[in-house]
Image (cartoon, rainbow, N blue to C red; front, side, top):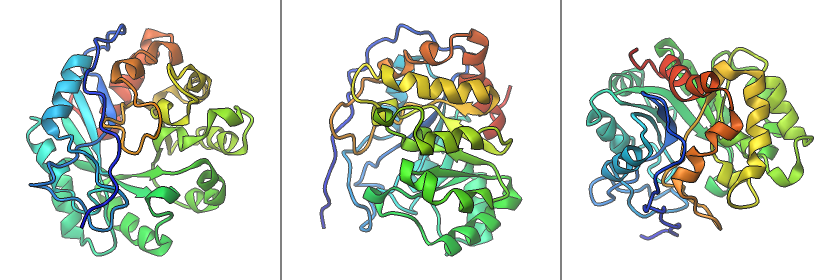
Length: 290
């Protein structure tokens, strides 16, 4: 069985103009395959080109990034082995966010925790299959709470609106992927962005100011800057940054990851805030050592 593929990443990463501080963390990136060892899920809507742990390490070396949070993507489904393998080989530099369902036992989650996983992710976006079964999702969240994990939500702007009350009822830390995928064409007055700004005033909400290439009209993605700035102004201590390498399902403008890192001093001009976003915040949330 074969599935639709997607564009490969731009692996000709240039040297960024911005120099990231020591122990900076890419808090949203993926490892894909190699599919001959870690097959893609038959239920996935796409099978991407391989982008394994070695490709990710080359990228981070070029960018000057020392730590990473590997986020399980839907192409691997609930088979988290590629991610766990990469974490194991990182010598403590990686943590993970898994995908799971209610068939996972408490022992399964403990094994993932022992392997470096600190959160569970649920996709709501339509092109990846749409919202999960909410009762099943609640069961999973109850099983991971004793481990101190957080929830990562991958949502589109319309999902932010539709599921606002559901998310409000969850008593745990919630991390939003890609700025809620709010399109820059709709401006900072759009309803979904205003909802997210309000939620970011709550102590249990975190925002990833990544995915500029997803919400922007095109390179150099400067139209995403005001959206990131709004979140940072509200809660600089609960902001994360990531590349989203290898950028699955990008339709038009495959970014060079150095361009995305070079957005950091634009969205956060104060070096102390840059350090919070790149170093301190991910270290606190994911338990990286000082």
